[in-house]
View 1: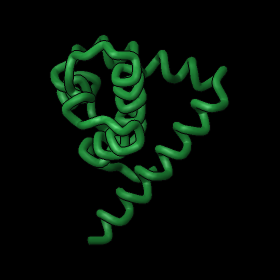
View 2: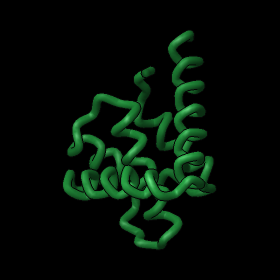
View 3: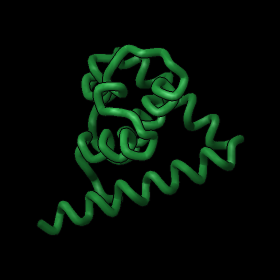
View 4: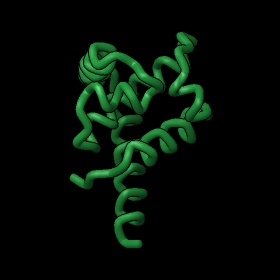
Length: 105
């Protein structure tokens, strides 16, 4: 698995869900923002070596327990929701492509 930077993940998520990185880092509880944020936290856990508190910091200072909850929730939903599983897979591919092209620079 290719390691990547938090910025790549934040940009991929904001781009895919048509939100700003500021939205992802905000404390907004709007469904589309909180859902994209949870997916972002899950993917950051998968694609980086960052600790839960560090991932929380990347998302605007969220607590590490929030990150843990988000990762668990997305992992559980992924099992039941084929559409989500497919979206996560596409996002992972996109993150890997971006990381690969950045590593070649």
